[in-house]
Image 1 (cartoon, rainbow, N blue to C red):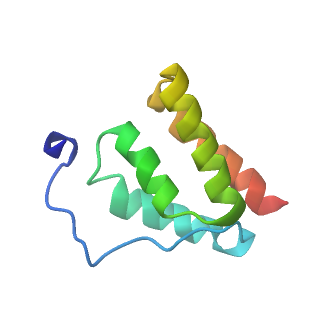
Image 2 (image 1 turned 120 degrees about the horizontal axis):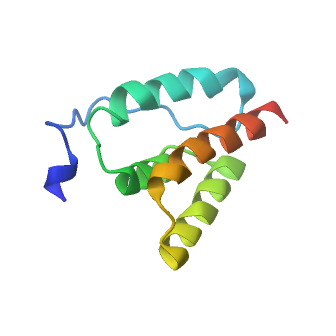
Length: 93
C-alpha cells in the first residue's frame, strides 16, 4: 500500500469536509486536487479519501459507489470523475 503514495503525506495539511454547500464545492475540489491527488496515486485509495472528506448527502453518494466498487469490481479510474460530477450536481440542488 505504501507504493500508492508519491511521497510523504503532510498530515497537518488536509482538505475541508464537503457536505454539499454549493458555495464551498470549488474550494473543496481544489483542496482535494492539490492535497490528496498528488500524494495518493491509487484511485481506490482516493475513493476512501473522498469518503473521509465528505459529509451528509455527499458522503452517502461516495459510500454507495464504494459498495458498487467492492461488489462489482468497477474500475476506480471511471468512478472518481463520475463522483466529482455527482457531487457538483448535489451542490447545485
